[in-house]
Amino acid sequence: MPAQPEGAPVWADAMFPDLEAAKSFYAELFGWDYDSGAEEFGNYTQAKTADGKHVAALSPQMPGMEAVPAAWNLYLATADAAATAEKIKSAGGTLAMEPMQVGDFGTMVTAQEPGGTWFSVWQPGSHAGFEKVNEPGAFCWAEVNTRDAAKTDAFFTSVFPYDVKKMADEHVDFTVWQLGGQPYLGRMQMTDEFPEHVPSYVNVYFVVEDCDAAVATVQRLGGKLHFGPMDSPFGRFAAVGDPQGAAFSVIDVTAAKGEMPSLD
Image 1 (tube, rainbow, N blue to C red):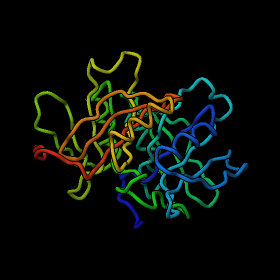
Image 2: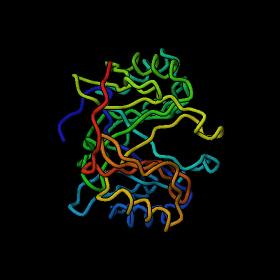
Image 3: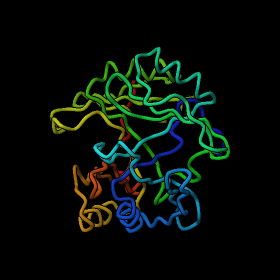
Image 4: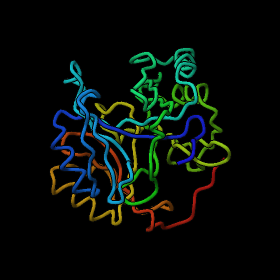
């Protein structure tokens, strides 16, 4: 894929207590196959669709992180990881680690913004990120679900050149972060409908051919349905969790219904 603009989603991965169980779950749900994980990179395992395109990665939990719940993590593009790390700190964010070079693949930073969301930044080397998007088994969208929209908005717009557009809907506090006039990321204020114990997090969407069938597969394999399935102008979608607790969403983008919401 061509180089992505600063702040665009470019990769997603997740760490699991049981890597093999996670690989089995997502292989059946999305049809993923996997590269062999290299020991020198902590058995980090790239997932690929039937045509061999890399679309995400799974890995075992690192030593000392056994108490951290399984979760999907989103990487945002940067041309200079070190400079972005300084912006993160200046905007009130906390670095989990300083910029780290990962072989010749690229340089990463993982951080937490003041609203509580964890995310990563990726400066590409030989690994540019997603090799396919917006197709079955691949990433298509993500939303920052936050407990504190004001802090989250102020942070991300300080670090990245997002143009913020608010959805004209009195029932939900939802904004779209645009780059070059195109939507790249969403931000939603979490409501009382979210259980109190759920922290701010990034909700990653993967495309499926049939949302209802995907939900049935998630449940059959021991995962949970959190919300939906629901029709929308973007497609029929549902929020789910895998058997190890990592939350994400599935969407059939061919089943869009209704008018697109207006943005202010």
